[in-house]
Length: 154
Image 1 (cartoon, rainbow, N blue to C red):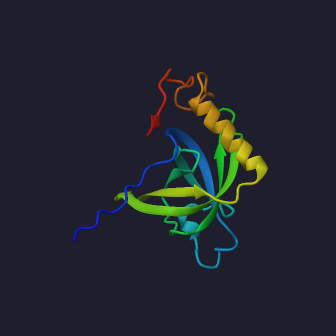
Image 2 (tube, rainbow, N blue to C red):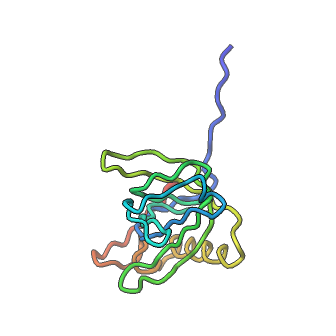
């Protein structure tokens, strides 16, 4: 008897982005995840690149391995010249895989325990990504290259 595995369907649109982000392991998991100073950690924050964003979570590229199920805080920054905080969210690592030999890791994170402020920040980012005039640096918005295409994926 053959059993067909359930099909996993994405519940929200995922947007490709290219923003700087900083990731920090929660104090709750700090004893389980030890980060070396050689990994480029600054005051407990790992520099990453935000590569996708949706209502359910987001993906970052990291040169530091972060184990599955780790609770993290991520600060998403606006692009230069602003470099200001766009959102600070908490989430749990759901998937991690090495992308090539650098090493670099694709880290998939789902939102968890968002504060009302963080939820408003997420909603604002999604509105910018889906809207007709997204913010500078977000796909579809003005950039140095003059790109005007959205990076939405189903």
